[in-house]
Length: 575
Ligand code: PEP
Ligand code: MG
Image 1 (cartoon, protein in one colour):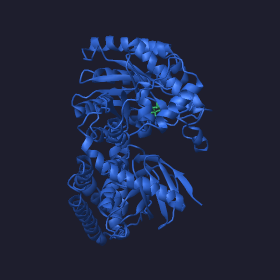
Image 2: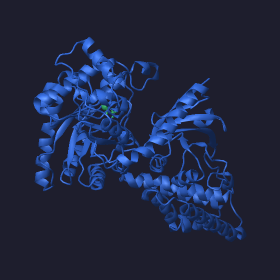
Image 3: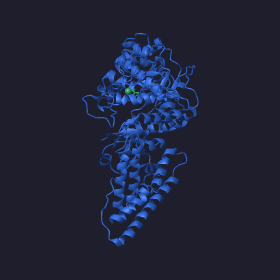
Image 4: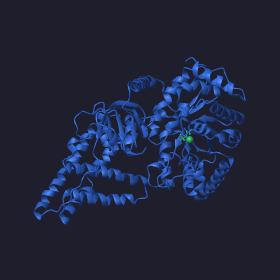
């Protein structure tokens, strides 16, 4: 019978194929002492292993396809540089000689010492370099133990068409495996910032990370479906499921190549109504895909992803650097930075992850930020400072009352004074907007539209809270209905409030990325959508094939009017 495993989808797309489990786990390190006459031979063995490691990496580098993003090549170059660095080459030799120990043990001691130094660093980026040390050291250890032959890096080609399931993958593994024809990655560890995730996205290979115990549950050779968008693996799929996913996969492939031609064309309906299409990003490297899809800016930057793979929260300067990098990459396109929306399903690393009874209703989003100024102030300062570098907008998540907006405005006022005193520039007209994603905010839309510079409909949460359905609980997934009249009424109410107050309203929840809903959203009055870059061209295509529906909802529609409106626009709109 079919079963599901859930992880974090980090690279979209569907892959269907046999599992190839990489059982590499930890390398067993032998520890032994050597007689004095064996020392020179041991050092020669160590040097030889270093040489083999260099040769392997150089060989991998030559196999990187020319259109691979620079940062993947950089990962490998960094590893090559490390193999030349005396801390990894000379220092272990000293240990072999002074302690008369074997090369594996010397290398392990040196690795532990280096990792300790990196872990103590304040700089979040440098701390992640510890992973690079581990990747390089593991490669040398495996060469020393002659264990590498059976592995991916040197494996022949039984991997063609396979979905690789591993504990973790190095960037080099990712490139090589793709070269060997692997069609999907599943790892037990890792987050959205893990190297595998970054590499998979840029190589456009569907991937899911954080699937605990995947190697124990999945068997070599068994056929699985990997849905990188939903973060789901389907094991033992029946014919019905297989053909459904296969059809989606083929359609996706065909559409992707067809749609590329729309990149530079405007998102305009047949009758000339212009829609602005922006993209949602989670990481700075997502900007490239967004630009390639022809997006008109970033409508939602989920900054909490900056925090989730770290064991400490990044400071103001680190945040500012990240924002500056994105702004530079956007070359004048607007960037909407959403302040931290930690809590609920996005638990912060480095903060006290004390479980609470109902996290979705707990201290999340703006509540957490206002509760912890130590977390919020550096981010607000970084956003203000970033606003001097390009067109930035600030957006607040999870609002439920106007007092939250007023508190933030006061805080921004204080921080502006602070920045003035320090002579640090910012844009005094930085637009401050808010997500409308709770029923309270939708009911109070009029007030929010008056007090904020723009509104954005976060339908993922708006649906969850309006319908009392946990968005991450599959048991109630069948009730998660974007077309429920209560949801449509909430959206309609917010759009009307925006129109009356001259406040722009956009939509950045997943609803905006569903092509079947385009006519309905246009008829409701939406002209500004922010979606995942991978869905952008498809939505543009749908807009360009749509004529603005003549139907509009009345100011105060009842249940039957909404139901008829939804039915007409989701079932009969000609395309
Ligand atoms: C939403 O809730 O619709 C939204 C865009 O925010 P997130 O998915 O990050 O909660
Ligand atoms: Mg939300």
